[in-house]
Image (cartoon, rainbow, N blue to C red; front, side):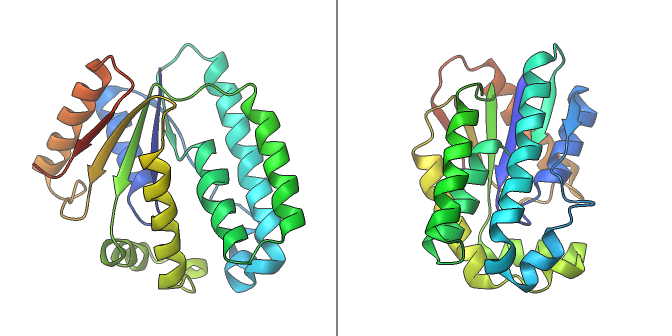
Length: 213
């Protein structure tokens, strides 16, 4: 079984992936953040490093997908390969940060990879507005993220909204986490676990939206 968590920078994907893995006994595949040689320079000079960073993430995510598809274990993945192309690379291209030539090359490689990629059994989207994202980013204190602009985050959120509205690959669970604290509030975590349980039991590939009810 393949579960994936999607969401903007600072939405809480890694933390929730860890929490769910501890509760359900799932294996976690984390995003390639630590040791990524392109992240720090990217936030200093986005046009210079955009293509390099996106290719690094795409390669890492594709390797994870192949690992998942060969495995018979239950795995939760921190961010999906779809986000690389449909959100981050798309945003860089539309904002003029990534050149048309680089984007065309990138999408060509992504499309080739898609021929052997199977969608997650369940995708969990953490929906978070700018105040939540900014607060979380500041709280974790990564030096290279200090230069992330609000506009960059806002643009990514717009792409996430479009992506999730049009997502037809499989089951999608939308969790509004703006008013949730699943790190310090056990009740909030229990609420999310209950919704994930229900989503896994639901046998139709339709979006399941929960608005902090």
